[in-house]
Image (cartoon, rainbow, N blue to C red; front, side, top):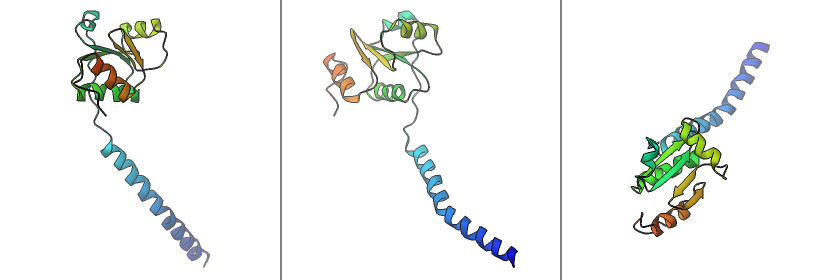
Length: 136
């Protein structure tokens, strides 16, 4: 009798967790599907490469704001390259010399933008004639 009761209790507690488990699995699947595809970073090949692009970004592979900026640049055909501050000596040196301690650090001519703000970046690129007009 105790075994039947224990089985019944175990069965009912499993049933109460099942909807939660389904929701968690669906949420995880949705975030994978709905997450924008990662865009490959355009790494600066050399210091000379910095002179041939319109925008230089200091980034890190794990940084979601860097990824958002990268996606923005690619979607808007911005001529850019980036230095990974953890994987490249040049990137680490530029970051160390910078007065800013957040990433991404985006250099657009003489302007420096720290972090990713879609509207600010759109305005800055548009004012430098690097975008047709500010994006909403």
